[in-house]
Length: 193
Image (tube, rainbow, N blue to C red; front, side):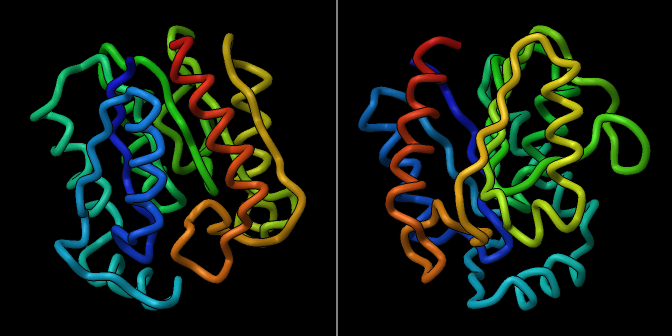
């Protein structure tokens, strides 16, 4: 069994994110789903990002990092899109990280936005659609490929399509087939880390 700290995306803690967490729980894992937005949810990425900007990107990321202080160190850190910011920071900088799951987003491990090199002892999976304008168009795919090229245990899974939040069953962008494959891969990953 793995213990997972799962951070939501820019639309907030949606029922689709909670459903994904429930799928992991049904597979025998313990999953924490903190609400970084304190109950606020949004119907567009633009509105969610405006809320994040109002609070401050750094503050929002650090809010997630502080939540980890209340939990054990040997966690799997997971994030959906915006939630990758605290998840990836924790996976790369908090001692004892067990693994990381980066879904819909990935930060570089060199240059701007970097938390440094990927730690060798931390396995990582990265999941996104191959034509997602955010993941591909904003350079996340390049960051993901850099991690895969340099980390000891890293995998990048690209799914056919252009939806950003394809794994959130509560949204119109949900892709049932791709999400089912992602969930199966994540569960297999959690069973071995």
